[in-house]
Amino acid sequence: MNNKRSLLPTLLVVVLIILSFGAGFAYSQLLTGAAAELPAEFNALGEAWELLSEDYVNKDALDPEELSRGAIEGMLEALGDPYTSYLESYQVAWSDLEGSFEGIGAIVSMEDGELTVVSPIAGGPAERQGVRSGDKILEVDGEPTSEMNLMEAVLKVRGDKGTTVTLLILHQGETTPVAIEIVREEIKLDSVYLDMLPDDIAHIQITHFAERTPVELTSALNSALQSDAWGIILDLRGNPGGLLDVVVDVADEFLDGGIILYAADGEGDIIEDFPASSGGLATDLPLIVLVDGGSASGSEVLAGALQDHERATLIGTITYGKGSVNILHELSDGSALYVTTARWLTPDLHLIEGVGLTPDIEVEITAEDIASGQDPQLESAIEYLQAQR
View 1 (tube, helix red, strand yellow):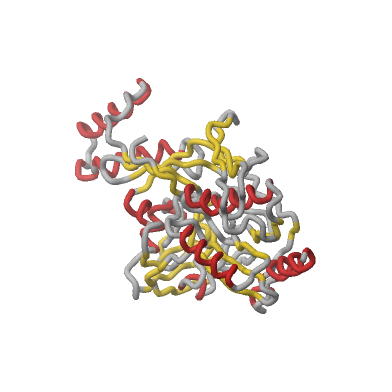
View 2: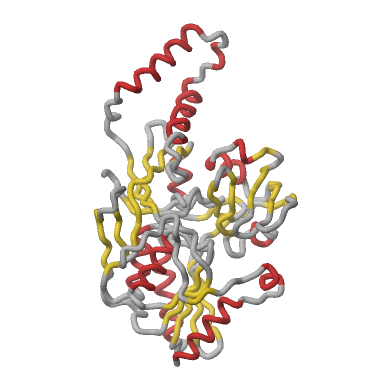
């Protein structure tokens, strides 16, 4: 592949409204050659265009770009794969992991035709206005999202900082939607946060896996070690994934060898493996990993590797279950295809796609906990670490 680089989406690359259209890994590829020869079955498509151009009564409606886009979307819809998608802008998809963005700060996917929040970005305007993981976005400024594809929804929600967007939100577990006004902001994507807890425990949260994550993590680990941290709680809750090479680099800090993950084809045969390198900063410190239903793709791969190698204990709830390998291709008109090409497997060959990871210790967190500022999952992790000391 030309210009191949491991990257996520969401579920796709992380397209963050920042939005994510999928939260998975992706490889980026710029297509420069001629299109592959079409099967004979596609002759009817050209015939249909020819007949329309000759006979259709409303010639003004014959927009080749619009009809071409519709044909592609129809072809992908027939696949029945929510992660193989047509994107109107390759640049939007690719740029979301490279800087700052203007939007509401939420990561979403399309689930059963409904625009669903995977997780709000920590500290972002969506989170501050009460948007939560699992919420359904029914309308954007009065327009039903059921009539949009994922990229259309992304572009509707994004906008210049300082402008307002109104979302009709159905909170998870509720029956009556509410309208929420959110003022768009510039979203700066710091991805690693360190909080030194009492008893010298380092709480390190990774919100997603972007280009600067390894540098940020190295800084956080060095700070934790300088503060005499003897144990680490690695918080991957709400993490939708990110760049594959970054996930591997992060795993290297906690593993001293072994396989981090495998890629398998549609028949289940392994086609590639990703080994860990030695020399990480935290290969020996006691380690707890926090996960939940918003932990997807890259965070599932990292948590699965640490769990299979018995390097860490997982605490929380079952993860999202996004374990597909995806390729982001730029098309000649600047649009893109995001194509599922393989599946991720953990070191013990556990399938992630559609299954997710089951924590070693399951701890729920309720809406009442959130409202009261309680975090029983973090509290459980602290207690478990202290019991091992």
